[in-house]
Length: 133
Ligand SMILES: [Fe+2]
Image (cartoon, rainbow, N blue to C red; front, side, top):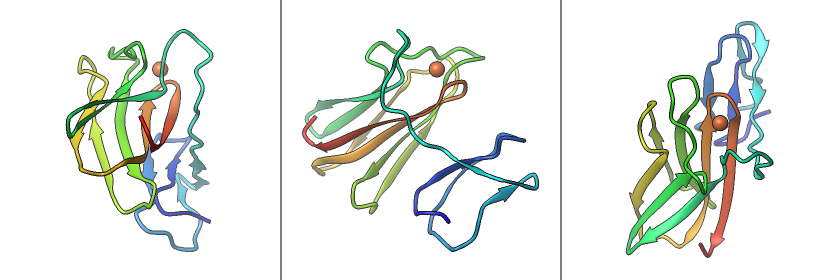
């Protein structure tokens, strides 16, 4: 069972896929069922993964970590993604080590979206914005 925009990972080869549109089948990779990634919302360590939002006029900036997450070769944010609450639009930015863990975008939307960040070591994180920053 899949749902639109679910993110799955293969724990054998590391493939990560997102469901564009849902069918009825089970996702399988390397002959194993793929794992549905459940985004975490709370940091317990000093290292920060929860996305937060800044605004500068119509420009919105999603940053990973209230203190910036490391962006080193072995430990970095691989992508940031924003999905509107109504699942009408998706914005994703891929990142490389040594880049800033942030995504800037413009929309005249209200802040009704979920912002995700994926750390290569610590997995998927989300912050859900309900219209307020
Ligand atoms: Fe991390």
